[in-house]
Every structure is written in structure tokens, then in C-alpha cells.
Length: 151
Length: 376
Image (tube, each protein chain N blue to C red):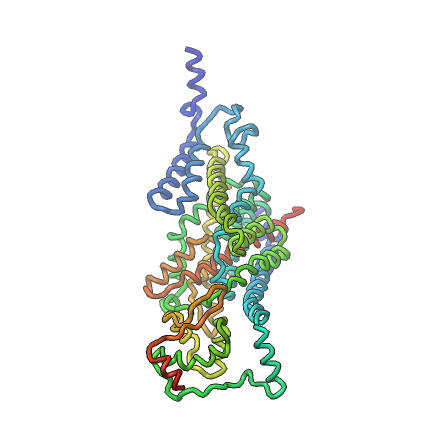
């Protein structure tokens, strides 16, 4: 038996269609699950200190999504200057933090191109990976500390 | 003198026929491609040498051939026909695989799914050519471009075809640098090939540890017949990522997978005895294998282009070609084709994401096909 008749007799169309749909749906579900994984982990790992602070402020007004930093109109080109602007965010996050937390916070506060900036920070060793996806802040030294003291 | 004639009549020179000679030439070609051209040497050399060993003619009944129940080769072949070696190879593969790029960009997993379409198109083609359903399913899995998976499924469904299917699967895997680039270029424009991919985010260790446990449950609940492959695969990956079993992971990705690969390659090669292997069916399997592999590559690329119609951030369609599970050959080829257009375009990590999802996809397909064939 050959040709389309053979396919039909052996239930080939149904097997091919069902097989393709099953493998697609399986990988779509897996893909969705892993796309949510890091978000779930970040949610579960939020430090209790932050939770408390959020609870305290939540009674007054929900501040979370509002920008709380004023940024200069002309954003500096120098990476050290940019790092100075990011410092309040890092202080808010604590000694160690996830990159996504810093990214979200910088986005909320209207920092331009946070993804590129964070990549530049990593390349300049201002953001140091501390394992487990956690980072620490290593501020650039030149002129930076003095400005901080003044500020 | 009679003793001498009797001895001569039992030698390979006397017993050889043209089919043995053809297979010895094929085996020698495999050895040449592996040794001189470096085409997948870890696979082609054991198989090529196995073909030489399996095609030395011998006097039947001595317990020498792989198909004789009391021979040493037959005992070694046990690991193939039971699906034992492919499972062990998957354990080692899992202990080698880094899923970080896939975890960082999960949407690329869809390209691994799309590339499996070659399997189902080939299933239809094989049925149309007159193969029985179990044979057709075993041939179709060549489209996954995954040697161990092809051998595993064939061992379960059509053990008499293990030789040709394994040789076809591994041949096409070795010929990736020849087969895939023309298809990729044919189906993409220069603008497509120049698309750069966003840098992947950092993936935490916890994500990498949780992933194999989560994936084994999701995949094997869907297709329980893929447990022997995916169970071992994700177990190997868990050993690698959990951080407390590095010694076991190290053994799995070195000594264990190497031993299984040697025995698998040698015995699969030895199973290609000319009189058993050189049949019209084998020719059909080789042709369908090429079709399967080409459709798999094409469907990955075309699906990536379809995804680009809906995505704000375009993906490089070349990545679709890495959705077949030939790790890391197809990922490397995608990267090279991308770099031939733009030397600063680094697609390797993204291609590895598609590649590893292709491994998962083809193992799920094997499970699905196996369960479809139960009762036939």
C-alpha cells in the first residue's frame, strides 16, 4: 500500500497532527514555566526588611511605582557620573541585589536605557557578580567619593 | 591438503561478497571523514570501525556475528536493542548541558519545537512510501537529528532497522556543515541574517537547579514514554547544577558517556552487515533521512520568520536551524553563517538555547511516537 491511501489507512494524518500539537504545546508550557521562574524566585527571595518597609508605607500611600529621584535633563555620558546617579537606587536595594531589581527600579525612576547602562556597569566592574545571580556595587573611586561627601 | 582447503574456505577472503566490500568502503569513508575532516569524530570513528568489524565475513554458527545469540558482539549489542546505551548517553549529555541561555530567553524554545516538524512530515512520507507505521515512526525520528533518540525509538519499534537508521542519523549529523548552510541562506535574506540578538540576562543558580526538576515533571507527565531519555537527561543536568554532586556529574559527562558512546558506536557499526544492511529499505531510509533533516532545518527557520511578524524585538531567523537537536554542531553552524554576514554578530549562545530545546523536543517526539504505536 502506497501514497495518500497508505497514510489514511494507517491513521497518519491524525498521528502527525496530534504529535505536532502535543510537542508544541509541551514546549510552550515549559517555556512559559521557565519564563516565570526567575520572577517567582525574586518574589520569594525579597528580604523581610523590604517587606516591612513596604507595609509601613502602604498605609500612607503606594509609593512603589512612582519615581522618587529627580534626574538631570541632560544625562551625563561619563560612566562614573552615571554611577553617581544610580547610587541612591543601590543604597535602597541593600548590599547585595538582583540585577532585575536594579533594572526595575531604574526604569521606574525614568533612567534612560537602563539595560545598556547596567551592561556598561558590568563591563566597567562597577557591578560585580557575587554568584547565584546576586550582584554587589563597586563604586568607581576617581572624584566620586568627594562628590558624595559634598552631596 | 584438505585441511588447508577447509581452512581457506573458512577465511573472510573466500566468504566475502560484494555487499561486504561496499560496506567496508562505507566504513572507511566514515573513518576518513572523522579522522581527516574532523566531522563528528567521536561518533564516526567508533561507527566506521564497527562497520569494518561487522563486515568481516565469517563462517556462520561460530558465535562471531552480532546477530548470533552467543557472540560477544551480541552481548554488547544488548545495550542498543534495549535502549540502554541511549539512556546512558542522555545522562552524560544532561551533565554537559548548560541551560542558562534557554532560561534567559525561553521564547527560543519554540524554535526547538518548530524544528521537530521534520519528524512528522517524514512520518507521512514514510507511510506514503509503503513503510509500516512502526518503521515509519522510526525513520521519522531521524528528523530530530538526534542519534541516541533515533536508536532508542528504533530499538523499541523496529529493531531490524537499527543499523540503517543509526547510520543515516549519524551521517546527517556529521554532514551538518554541508546540509544546513545552503538551506539557511535560501530561506533568509541578508537583512534577516544581520539581525543582532539582545544580550542574555544573567541566570541565577537557583533557576538552573530548579529547571531540570521542573522540566522532567512537565515533559514526562506529557509524554511518559520519554522517561528513559528525558529522565536521565534532566537527572544528569541536576547532578551538574545542584552543586553538591560535582564528582558524579564529572563521571557522567566523561567516563560514563564515553564508554556508552564507544559501545554504542561500535555495535551499531557492526550491525551493518552487508547482507542485512544493503536492502532497498536502507536506500529509502537514507533518502527519507535527508528529507527529514532538511525539513527540520527549514521549518525552524520559517517558524522564526513567522515569529518575527508578531515580535517587537526581532529574532535572527538563522536560529531556527539550531532547533534540531544536533548539539552543538547546528548551533556552531548557525553562528558561523551569522558571522559570515557580520563578524561581530554572536549568535552562539542563543543558538545553544534552541539546540538544547531541540534535544528536549525530539525526546518528547520519540515518546509521543512510541505511545502512538502501542497496540499497532
